[in-house]
Image (cartoon, rainbow, N blue to C red; front, side):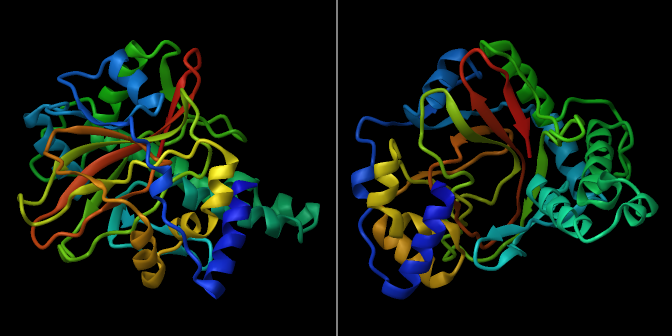
Length: 338
């Protein structure tokens, strides 16, 4: 309902350009960033109750494993463009490569197949195979399994790789979340097939320009409730040299009620499009961001419901592995999926 409301607000803002400041949504008591030597239950409680904008765990992934995982991502046969979903134009190419099929792309492909199925009779459906075989989900499950095995070293195609079996950054994250969170943690599963989802996709960003302020967006539109919501975890394997860009910017907005959406619908709707005029207008409505410069081996967790963006950079690469974490209460499993 909220998503539909904001889409209609976006249509209205295209016509009127009437926008309001988002400063009233800033949470004044928000701890900005927590840095911890390890991932603990205490810092998870702070993050999942929306009392901090981010959690940083430096040296989360060991340096010797960082270099191996980086090379395995770069050599992967599953590199593809990271599609971004724009409500006005659908899925579009971005400036980021994905190593592993994003779930949103596979799900949309399956939805398209369902619409096609409605136009076929039963005989045609039987001839053409099952829904999963025809849908993008079949490719999703296939590549997810191959990618995970390859990154762990069981089927790596990296030249001179010794195929040593190691934990991926997402394996380590999932194990530590399972040990620290009351309800444990597990990989999410597809509701139709019960098959495990990809818990960690690679991201490879190439130089654009440090004057590129990035796509300010949210990954989920919802009221922010304690111990609930969608969070994002990134483990960095390579980052641009300091001073070249590549910062992670987070805006400390707190959306506590439907009234917040209604009162600021025109400005919030701009988070749903990459149009340059909309991004420029959005930044005029936003307060200054919290800026983080990631380091190789570091884990950074944020709430994906807060506006965030990655600043462009002039030199180097920005390589990470990312997963979403769905929080459904203290006593329930955390669900990881990309």
